[in-house]
Length: 488
Image (cartoon, rainbow, N blue to C red):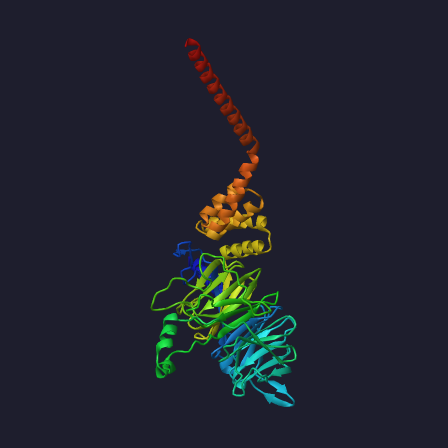
């Protein structure tokens, strides 16, 4: 008996050691409630699209605690770059979250230079590192080993005042090396630099949200009163990312805007699609004590999808190419998976990462079966492969029978197959009135075309019967008149 007990204790000890030394724990149950919005703008429960997987800290990596980390970026090769702003360094990890190197400075023209509270970074396909070195008023470009390549300092231009202080906060880079910089105090738009570092101009000025009551009052107020009023100044952008077509996705910091997310074409025009039930702006219903979503970062996921980070409720909202809200995850708290002060979001395969300045850590989330099915189905729809998406949407409905986008996706596939009657039922359940109208018109045309011969035959027969009936009536009336005339 004693030997049996001893054996069980040995097994338990071995199992405990294996669990402790496991590189990453399996995704744990969500410490937050996942939800979505229906057609009536009601928050309804939804399966979790992402679950917390694990947390990466500086202490875990053996390099000391992170201090006020500012940004995170994943290179096309899969390496993870964490901008540890408070420690003025860049921490480089491989795809398994193991430390590769730490870049705490660089050599330029024979002298050692350091970062000063850098705010953002971006890594291109050649592993070149672009750093928004905010405190030093410059953008620094390094190679993959940390060797200095180039710096972009305060630009000179006729449209930039002499008193302008260049303080880059965030940045992104296109395929040909043009650098797009979100700078502090710049309301004209995102600053654009060519591959040589020369200033080109601004891209995508935010529109002013006017208060017309104040505008009218300004017309009748005194000079002193007007001086105390708030000026109609455009809001600043908060972050930017680039898609494979060279379009810039950008968020602004105006919580009252109905268009806090933009997709800017090369001309600076906003071409973001907003075909969903409601505005593309994070939470559409909220408590007065918290206020609307304040979007501080955007990540392009590919295939038309993108995620935005809300600093009000510490949640992530993901949309498809047409502006439909796919899913929401995250929340406030101190548990694993909840966030304190999120500052940046990134993606790597089936994982998404949120950099939490409040906890000085990188929180890693893994997609669930529901999340992967939604992502794959939305990707097929974006690629025009609606028929391939149908089976995936049906699997989604098994997990969430109230998922309107799945009904709409199946309906669109049926519409492409000219199964208009079947599509009507799915569009009705999905509350897609526009698609329902299209399907109804097509179904009506189909019915008329199919039954046109029968309709014409019946119509002609009715006309012939009507004519014969009228002729018979006239004949009978004439015969009666003749008979009456003959009697007289």
